[in-house]
Image (cartoon, rainbow, N blue to C red):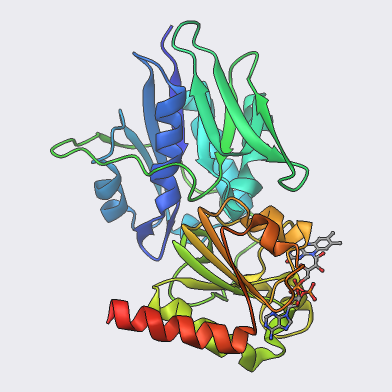
Length: 327
Ligand code: FAD
């Protein structure tokens, strides 16, 4: 029996977020021959995004373009997606485990009467019987659990930066369908303004390189050498909660159990002890470099490369050496 998968596309500043192509890749892994994968795009002035999305291996793109959807509003987005889901009746919904995905997935699961799995990091499909095994971290990343759904429908959120992005197909143009749904006019919550507090030009959750500072940076100025290194490596700056609590940086930079979960290719932890709550947010990084003056710091247990030393000496040296290589 063929199934219908629906990807919820995310975009920011007029660009598709990479997690959309990653969620599509996850759906491709979970689907079998004859299954249909379509996407839904919500927003205002979505034409260029729909055009970009149409080159991906999708059967169709459902678009709801309405000025009432220009900024993410959980109430409006849930209402519109709920209506669309009633019409499309997908067997599975896939989206990023982003702020929006975390917010909206449970509401959609309730609407669809679906089972939900969040923060999925691996998918294995048995082509013989069609069962799909999902892996997700639990207990703040201390263990991994493998789960399968016993029945459809499913709602799945996938960890950003974890699945490769599905490739776009040259010459492919998925049809764009106007869904004929409007944003609700009566809302209990209204987004008045969006004030962005970012860690720089590169989005922390999508960064390939993160240079992170902990309480060891001593004060707000202590982040400057880290910012310099991150800029050189076209990366983002992150932080431990210790650094945020001490007022050295904004909480938008916090990585960990109660902060952002990141999976960059390179994570450089500077003056971070490596508490379990911090590891929960970064232990999935491909390569971890730790710089700490305490050789017994727990961060060295998860680090691929450890440098015992003063970060104020080591980080500028690294920047100097990288500059020689990168020009
Ligand atoms: P510290 O533990 O104080 O470590 C500072 C490190 O810097 C030390 O290892 C020291 O040796 C080193 N150092 C000092 N000076 C230098 C120098 N000049 N050069 C090199 N190294 C130096 N934490 C998070 O990070 N993220 C979370 O999401 C999070 N959520 C939490 C949720 C709960 C419910 C709780 C209870 C805690 C949470 N925490 C979280 C806090 C966590 O337990 C730690 O307290 C915190 O991660 C410590 O931050 P830190 O490593 O920067 O500071």
